[in-house]
Length: 136
Length: 481
Image 1 (cartoon, rainbow over the protein chains, first blue to last red):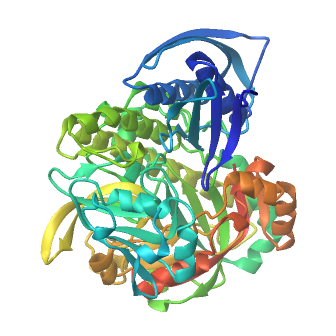
Image 2: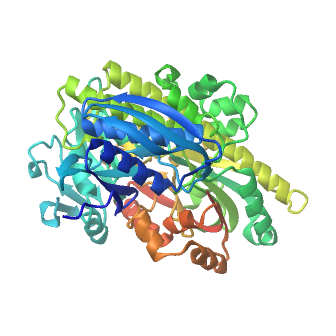
Image 3: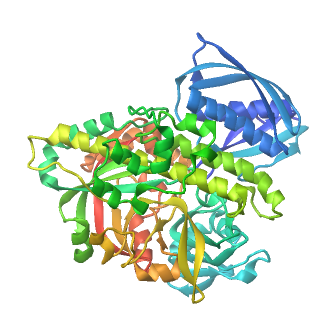
């Protein structure tokens, strides 16, 4: 059985979204981050690498996913840093991450917000899938 | 999903989803639309989202949708819902992520043909002086952030970026006194720190317009609108600051709904009682973001005036720009309305909807009090915009609310597949419109084909009595991020 693509773009009248799949929660969260960064068109300067660690807690897996992506969107807008590589340890309510990236050298759009619209993390194809809609 | 047969036709421009449609509805939902618009609105989840808003505890009267309704997050865009104080719900989804996104209109004594030789220079100056686009910071460095958050456009007046009459001619005089910066996160402050006085991207724009037609001479005279003259619209909001405030409280309220035992059909509709700690904190932070937006649009006015002077001084007899009005179309406000024969204090959520108070409203400057509140309805890029005026009927029907724009019909992706930015720019310029845009992809996303026809949207609210047509504007130059 072929596995689904890590992420694909969806249609939404006013905004944009992605459908994400991962073999486990770590992969799901990393693919969601890759999908969101692809939507922004952000490119990091490899000559000035930036590393950061992050720990998040939430009361359910959907909120954790929104919080995770919101952090990356915040770094992009407020600190002008694009994180493009992610080492994750994820449970349904807790996440620790080591992020690697660099100062933004190209950017097509910012993410206004990661929404809860149609958001659900569900088991699928031997892993997990989620649909995430962004307000842009 | 709501189907057409679930609705009752009240008249040609008004439809009702009865309370019996779903068990969890507390009040009926009403949609102002002609039949064609209604059918378009039923194509996605917009009407279901409207029905969802009728489940908010404390909701009164009707949940209402304006003809520019389209799918949003929690509330539909074009949605209006009022909840009764003291314990009715406040929902960040009823305000939106771009808190106090709004429109400002300026008017000049310049006859449009006189501007024509300088239009390209003016467009270039506006694009240069008014920071726009993704990640673009402003040139004004704010040292007294808290003052700005508490005073809004009145902060800009103290700093020399406004005239006293700009403040008089701004909704709520450009300031929410109950703003509380103490409830704003460090993240929101940082996200907005270098964005004061910037336009941003997306559907935000600055447009130089021709006042093409006057429908109501009396109201137009009061507002200083003269057919054939040049006007300017500014459409933007609270930038990353407001987005972060909304984001913070939508997260906080995920838990609040559990604490207060509120059952909701959509997590994006999360809410808290206005008289709870959570509700009061969001209200204070939301008003701080609204003040940020008022200050932001005021700084852009300063940049626009500077651009007019730099381009036109010595070339034309007059280059001055007077403010007509500034309105918020993503906001929640505490107001008193008559419901079932009683005066009731309510929190009115207007998400992609504009306040449209009628004649006699005390807050209005003296010159507008006899005609009603100006309402600014921008069309999609390259198409017409309208100036309307609020009515007494809107007070009776819609908590003094009307439409806010054209309303999307096509996704951003679909627009990009349908239209090429460079080609659109050529078409607009062939039509005599000067275009300055930071991104061709961004231009394509905002193509007129992706939006409803603003003439039809305005005709519905005009016929329904929610606002009356005063003037129609057409674009001469468009600046986008």
